[in-house]
Picture 1 (cartoon, rainbow over the protein chains, first blue to last red):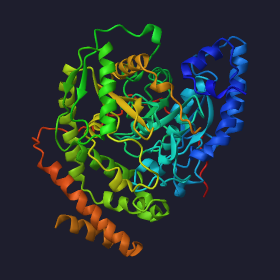
Picture 2 (spheres, chains in turn cyan, brown; picture 1 turned 45 degrees about the horizontal axis):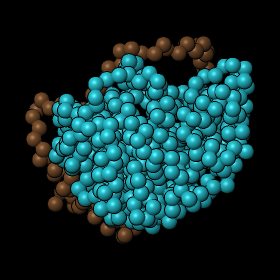
Picture 3 (cartoon, rainbow over the protein chains, first blue to last red; picture 1 turned 180 degrees about the vertical axis):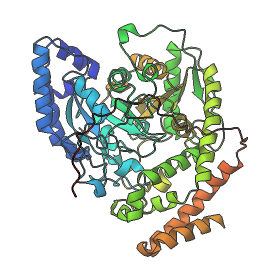
Picture 4 (cartoon, rainbow over the protein chains, first blue to last red; picture 1 turned 45 degrees about the vertical axis):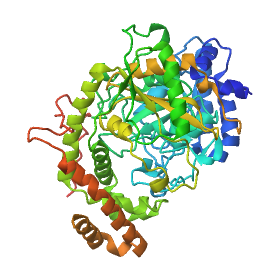
Length: 469
Length: 75
């Protein structure tokens, strides 16, 4: 078995060992599976482990690598995918009881890409039911119960990519795939002290993924480091005619190699002063220190301000209406009552009642906001702020009241389809992780990756592991 | 009040399947939604400010699937 220390290595380091045949994909897969079987249930991390499939893929990868056919950084690399991505021959539950026995005849596009890269699927990561599309009041809003934070199991991982966050923090896979409509990659990454990339809208095909909000859903990696996120993103990005939301070929594709990162002028960084209304003192102090460290590499950091307006309201209305349509049959049939969460059982009725006129107004406001953000990105390449104004909340928190705060950066970032990368930057007094996020212009995911990577070259927060594991 | 009209419409459609507690919750949620809708409506928009959800005409179609062999109709 591979040591726990190796299982916590960044994907980039594991890839070097696999490429040079110092690490066996089979042994690595067996080790992650054994650890996942032992610790996964403690954290509510997985919806389902797929050991037979994983070992079959690992054996194939090992055979190819031994015969000199190395495919790249993800070859033989074990990962978990959020349980809203279809995998042929296995259940895809969307984390929700009404879909507990559901399966699809095809792999999701992201799974296809990862199969081609030779990655090894360990299992389906737990998630909040319907990715929170009907709303939820409690962390337990999932077919598999609450995901528990490996840093302290009395606390939540955040959602909706809850299992993906737990898996990375607990060292149960080399990388995971999550999704974000609003906050579902950035928040679990922040709460769990791992690195997560929400790509530009339209760069990763959603074919075979559960739809919640057709104009806001995005798929992205949750990993140990920003560089790892870039490597996974390079594999899963690309145009797909089966997802009409994907960008054209030249705008969707992403290539990455740290050795050949394009040279560009000094990146202009704006430190946001109005990303959050109220930031917990512990978090504010940690973020201020992170920005101070960042100044060593980027001395020209200036203060920046987001435009103000009803942008969160616009985002809420768009998600509510698109979700009410996506799950219209579930709502009309009354099967929405089978959802676990009391808010999820009724919120669809509220969302259905929003008028078409209000929905289109929200879309028109989005168009104006995109231009305002484009103006802001004339001055800055990357905006930096706390991933969240708080650290993880307890499992029994009423999320409607206990985790309800204005989120203009999340609203604006997701409404405009902007890329964001959250990385760990310290801990609060309860030893819970604090996250720092980098947001870039649509299409310039690389800028966010470059700044996050530079930050991780200056710090070692991304190398810390929970003691409870 | 507008939110009460939305609540009435919801109850007219789905009231029979909702408990009293759920009805109270829906009333609360609709009330909380109202200021958001009003904020959107108050935002200054000109007639020419278009929507950010555009139709993309399906010009470049994928290759059509091969035609199925004709099956004789049953009479």
